[in-house]
Length: 228
Ligand SMILES: C[S@@+](CC[C@H](N)C(=O)[O-])C[C@H]1O[C@@H](n2cnc3c(N)ncnc32)[C@H](O)[C@@H]1O
Image 1 (spheres, rainbow, N blue to C red):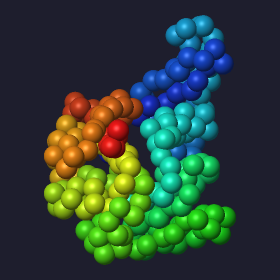
Image 2: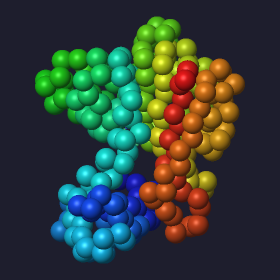
Image 3: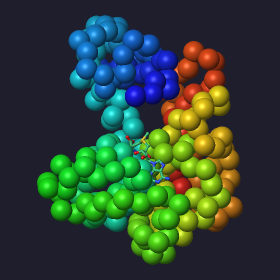
């Protein structure tokens, strides 16, 4: 497991409705631990204990909130362990999810979900061959998280995904300018420009949920693209 981020959000929602969080550098919310923090609610001043479970829920809900309007036939590019699909498949508005990944391990991983949800179909596929696997305008939404930074030929990527999608693209990922694993250095604004060039309207949202000690601007970039 690569530790890309030194600091990560750890928080919870207070019963009064206010979100409270800190950035801390001990544990990621998904690491098994009995680590806890106590935060004083900035609004009602109650003390809130945040354990691993609460932190993970808070983190996941934040991410998922950017995918709330996804519907119809969805393509999850870079399925991985299924973080997005396992949430989206429970939405009534989602009819079917195609999940692709280049990694054989994802194929194993998805079987647990497929036995529960028949409307998920996995394809072992490299993103660069996506036009061989999907016809033009065959899916309503393309979603991906933490995948775009591994795309080498970004021009082909934008050409291809904008061909197969009908309604919208929801793309999220980290950007660390000096990270050796990144295959391209496109900033959120560059991604937006590429999609606009191809006739899409784009909204950029920056989530400051992670931070690096190397003083690089770190963000989750969420590109909402659609024919609004
Ligand atoms: C950091 S993981 C993210 C997984 C998942 N989307 C999530 O949010 O947890 C990146 C995933 O992208 C996949 N991936 C990277 N390059 C790919 C490519 N060219 N074609 C298909 N999948 C790719 C990797 O195999 C890996 O599963």
